[in-house]
Image (cartoon, rainbow, N blue to C red):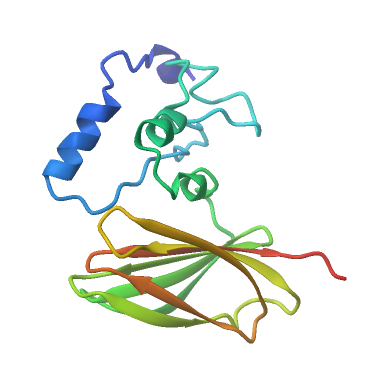
Length: 179
């Protein structure tokens, strides 16, 4: 806890950093929302050990989201750092990868591609029976565009995830209450 109290982020310039990332050719950006020791870099409602109450007294992830106004930050804020289960879905080294990871009852799918655009079918047979809400973030038609959709799925469904070259997609699957 001592180190977080000493961290003030007084020299942190998010706009200058983002400009540098874009100039270097970054096609997307991911902010660290939760440090490995469970220190949240946002105004966490889970516990008081976060960057708003300790250390810099700033909502680091919130500042990135506000400054950039980009879709996808709502996904980053909810990704856990510890997993109960991980499943390899598809992929080849240097080409692409699709992983599914479970935290509690929710499943998270992450998909990345190499230097060729891809649309990939992702079977949901790993899900338990029942109805699930799928929140999907995937690449848009141009760099830095993110499309967010939502739909109801079951373990019998197959998602189609589109990614630009060096792109990514993410899905959060949460069980819906039984009717």
